[in-house]
Length: 234
Ligand code: OAD
Image 1 (cartoon, rainbow, N blue to C red):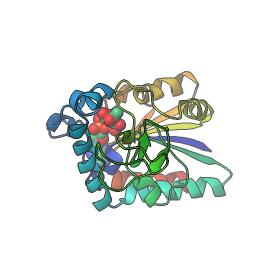
Image 2 (cartoon, helix red, strand yellow):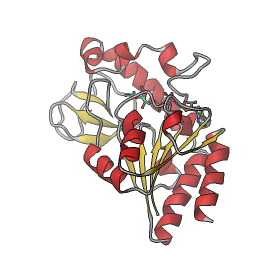
Image 3 (cartoon, protein in one colour):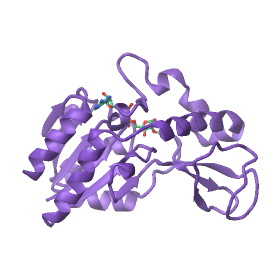
C-alpha cells in the first residue's frame, strides 16, 4: 500500500511548538501578525523583526522533542517498506521532529527552520544559531544575505512536482494535524479525490475540509496516530 501523509502543526502541538490557528484564539497567528513576519515584503521592510520571530521559534524547536505521533509515522515508513509499500511524508511544518523521530524521507513543503539560505549565492546551509542581518554565509562569505530557508506567504512551496506525482499515485491520502486553511496543501484532499484516492483526516477536531474525507479519526495526535498506524500495519 502507498500512503501519502500530509502533516501540519497539530502533529507537533504536543511537543510544545504551538499551532497557528485554534478555536480559543491562542494560536501563533493570533499573537503575531503573519503579514509583518512571514512575507518577503515584511523581511525587506524589517528584517530585524522577522529574524527575531524565527530566532524565537528556532530556540523553541531546539528545546522540543518528537512525540508519539512522530514516532508512529517513522514506524509506518519502515513497516510499509517491509511490506513492499511506501510512505510519502509531506509536511507543512518547518521543524525537524519527523527526522528526529526516525523518518527517513520527509518533504518539507514550507522549508526548514534549521537551514539558512543566502540571497547572494543561493546556498542552503544547516543553521542552528540565531540569524541576524550581519550573519555571514559560510559558502560565499558575504554578510547580510541570509534568511531562514522557509516559505513565506506569497512564495512558492517547495517540492511541488514530487508532491503532486506522489499524491496521484497513492492508495490513501491522510491529512494529519492541519486546519486545511492554507493552500496549496488545503487543496490536496480535493486533488486526491479527483484522482480516485481514498482520503482520511486525523485531527483534534473536524477541520475546515472535514466533509471531503472518506473517514476520520479525532483526538490528540499522540494517541490517535499510534493507534491508526497499528491498524494499518496489522
Ligand atoms: P493550523 O494551526 O492552521 O492547524 C493545526 C490543526 O491541528 C488544527 O486543525 C488543530 O485542531 C489541530 N491540532 C491541534 N492540536 C492537535 C493535537 N494535539 N493533535 C492533533 N491535531 C491537533 O496549522 P497548519 O494547518 O499546519 O505556513 O497551518 C498551515 C500553515 O499555516 C503553516 O505551515 C504555516 C501557517 O501559516 C506558513 O507559515 C507559510
